[in-house]
Length: 252
Image 1 (cartoon, rainbow, N blue to C red):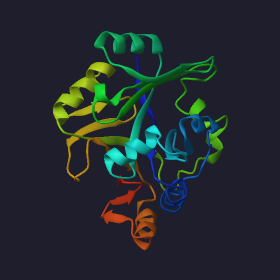
Image 2 (image 1 turned 120 degrees about the vertical axis):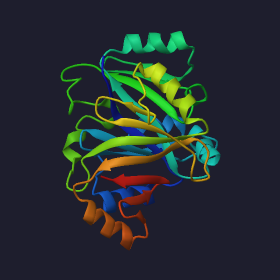
Image 3 (image 1 turned 45 degrees about the vertical axis):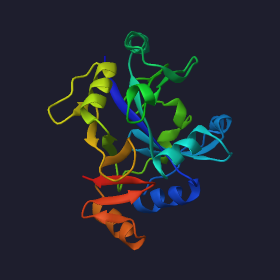
């Protein structure tokens, strides 16, 4: 069985400013806006980064789960780590075996979804999904949450992949073990959990914010252009880092 990092979800107080920064700085384009998130009182935008997706959601109503998450974490930031698997049934069985609660799930003829409760996983939402149908497991294949033709919006001039997600934790070792048990993938000595196409890195809290998804490592062939644009917008935070939507984006 394999497990890939397929999508990262961020949450923002306002969608438009974040969308503009992602486009201007990283050069990525919106491929889809899912009307279905309106059920949760949200609006969203999805952006391809290579064959992975970056989603940003923002509340449009009072008292939404996304809005409460913004309050708990003290502003914009990471929200969900969304993975793609090749066989959903044993993944569900494993979650049941471990007694992990499911926060949300749905199944249809094209897609199987399982979002785990962050109070049971630690750090942030951990989602395990499977795409079904023709080409479903192709590395650049269909992905229902990103719409019917997400590939048309790809622009890899500046960034072309998400290499790692950084999860800051009160107890990194304990949280890493939980995620390792769920994924059935061992952790290395540096508390990295290596998926098929990316790593999840578990680190101590260092920015004064609660547990959560705090950073991403991006493959950045256009690193120089990214830093120049970010600097002009006051978003550069290091020699190889920019800060957008409450996230540390490390350029590799």
